[in-house]
Image (tube, rainbow, N blue to C red; front, side, top):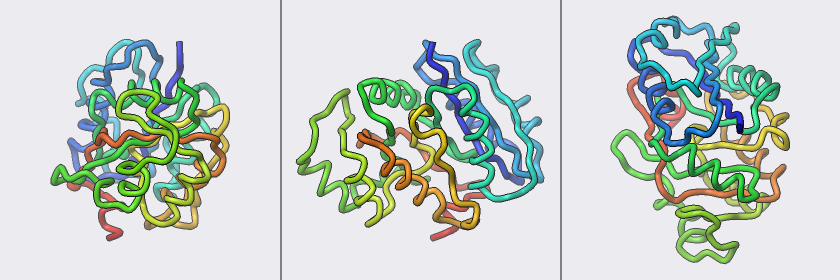
Length: 237
């Protein structure tokens, strides 16, 4: 059975936010997998234990664990999760504590990765429900007029890793909450801890792409971003 780690960096100041994220993982349609959710408590002022206790009961194949560390910012928190995940996981997924997945997210990612890719990501929608990719040059260059490999699973397209890195260098494409990747090949990639406010996730995605032969992506929005918690991504704008 495939093993999937879900890395959730946690630093929030109010109740209810993490519970929504956890519920969206519990609702994933993929069942033939062992899923371990690693909540990385980055010295949050609101303890994640209360959030986990208040969340719905997870299915039998999903476990939730807390890893605690001194405050170091989102990049450092994710790196703590990556190091732990590399010890057991086949695939590593990321989810911010104020975001949610649509039920098909992990199933679509697993299907795409098992077809031969190293990294998967999907489009994401902001708090107003507006998808991100349609407004990008990437949409016009790769999606609307694809000159690359054909779809390998429904709604998913492929792109060579170096070409995806080039596209990502031009504009922001993959929100961390939408990224899933192979641990065996990419489990050693880490985020910069020098960039605490924003940007470490963008560089991390480019590093993943540069180390990959093939990247796959869904032009369907599989991730909904929240805006009611401590959200460095939104605040950076």
